[in-house]
Length: 135
Image (tube, rainbow, N blue to C red; front, top):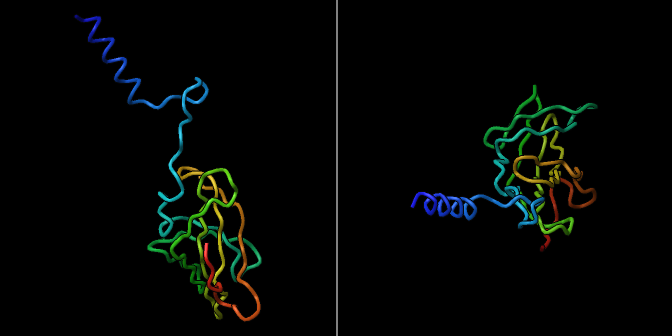
């Protein structure tokens, strides 16, 4: 009876625990970027400066002296074709002037988001925001 209980317990653990990818089982998927708390994250940007500054946002806003840094609701899309969603995080910096809305583009997973690109505010008639578009 004890052997059977141990065998059933072992089988139950195999069903609950993820299979390591190296063992030939299905791959273990990391938590997606949709689970990151973007309004309360730390960002690095050179807005209104000639060097990068660290902004620790709380409720989407951070301040560094006279510079106000703000992040907006992220947009998620698979931009790299790997089947995982990237995060596009719009942000703005306001000092003496409004610097327009720019984008951080992150890849990776919720435990290790990695900055893929920083897209500056567009020029021309759409300065200060992004023109309407459809995904």
